Image 1 (tube, rainbow, N blue to C red):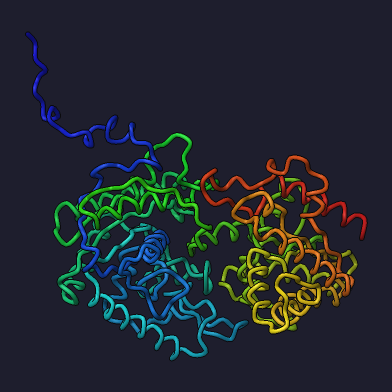
Image 2: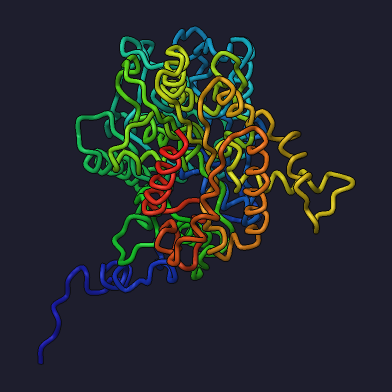
Length: 582
């Protein structure tokens, strides 16, 4: 009779073996069992969250599921407990916990075009800036006081570690993003790159622990590591290698502290998102943005911390798309397309100006070897919500962030060159300013409900015209001014895909009537409007071949955009219109 040899693995449970603990788990529908040891009282918990952009997902989920989440009263635009925006490194949090450094001369930037002071330590919190250094400093002090008060009222602090890469100035002050990306201006004589090593990160977290324990000894810190990859690296490594190094160091520190210090616990959001899976649902098409389904799946495991360790199968998120998470570093992608020398003398006939649709159109034109200037300047919300200032000398100044102003600079330079040459060569502007229908249609409906004599069931052209006049006039005046100065302006509608997805189907009628109304408006000013949606519907028999591939059958789809095939189709249509009208 033979017996199996006894080894240290012989009596291990299923969770300790890859086959039973991972390979046999149906990701997305079935949770990992016993993947963490957190146990939190829902009734008595007071949860705060800070860290990278993934921390916003955590905060949003906690709010939506009725947990006691401390949300900042000073910054309600983002889902965070503190008015600091994204905090990617422990050092940045440590700076806020330590004594303020009011004598630092580099972290406040005066933007001459805006006539405002920008806070480079919180570039995404107040992108519109402050009217004086004093009001900026007062706002910082208020944020610091809120931090201390909130920590006193917290017993669980979730800290999502995001990056090892950072930028610092000559005074050794560290910044949440490279100056010049969101706000300010980069100066290589002042700002330098720094990559935190294991010892530095561990030391900073232990110092954070000591300070927080002095403020509130009852706090427990749950460390997580953001699964969102780096958008770009300032190191000399390939982005794939740099990202893996960064996440590995952060994970190693978090693992050591949670295993050896009772003040720290660990929650494995990084592992749940990044473990291999067939037909992966956890990232969108760019393989960087974590999908809504993935957030729901991760948080189904976190939910078990409040329910005596029981993990329930997650329900895939079939709600409307989560509001855009503010990930500051993503703006680097658009900035990387800027020419390295903005003083070049080439004047391009074609200029693109608008939101992400113009960015995608720019990509299509680049692949077609068509020369042009511009593309995306701001998000659609930036235009629809008036995050700009009308400027007679420059048409307008984008105020969404410093990146938007950088993206607009070559556009204005190109238009200005045409004007100074008295249009020796024809200048054609393609824009979707005034559209952004996923934003403006909702604004129109809200506006309409406030009108005493409006009949919501019988919307008229006059209703739209009145809305354009009262709510969108500044936005539309940008293109009108460009036309009046001699440029040929072509306005293009949004894509037609709202009619092809269930989650947007209720908006189709309003969206298409909005297209008709704005076409009528522009015709009154002799500006050409290309109704791409209607033309596409008339010509294309296989529309889903052109639809965005972001989303899954059970998740919200990106009905706002098309895929690369759609923007190539659009580019060819617009080039034909240009040749016929110029």
